[in-house]
Image 1 (cartoon, rainbow, N blue to C red):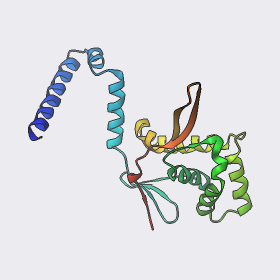
Image 2 (cartoon, rainbow, N blue to C red):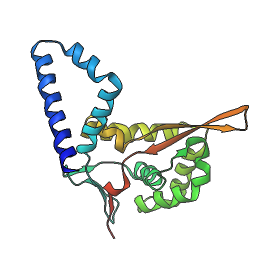
Image 3 (cartoon, one colour):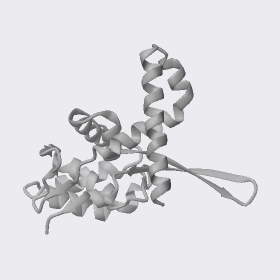
Image 4 (cartoon, rainbow, N blue to C red):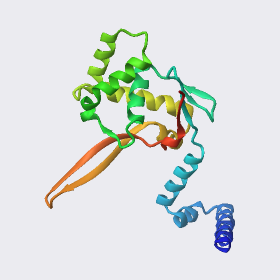
Length: 193
């Protein structure tokens, strides 16, 4: 194992030297061709993963990126939506948000302690209504807050984004589940008390 590790480190050093030679010769086009666009995207994602911060959710529902020492400034409704999606790493289809009405209401009531219960229920009604655009607006706002704090690749782990799953039933029926997920590994989420 030790020999293989040294060998892989030697290969990495050779790649680094060759990449520098191509770069010095002004041939980034050949470097990109050698690496390939899909691998470049994987490398960008891996670089973003190295910059991930733990997300601390305090008892009073403040969201803090501890490694950046920054608070994520969100309104109670945005926090409620975010908590719902954090609680469901498998993802949720927007059109099925009505199935999560009670859970979303609980999160909203917890994050908006001073708000009138009727206003909270009215807000949840808008969020779970598939004909209302409220959920998209809330997710866009959450995305903007994270993009204002970090680069887009790092932010992609924290935002609520789309994930499509293909399902095949029998031999003739194909359907797609358009799930929305937060891809942040859950070991990065820390909850106080």
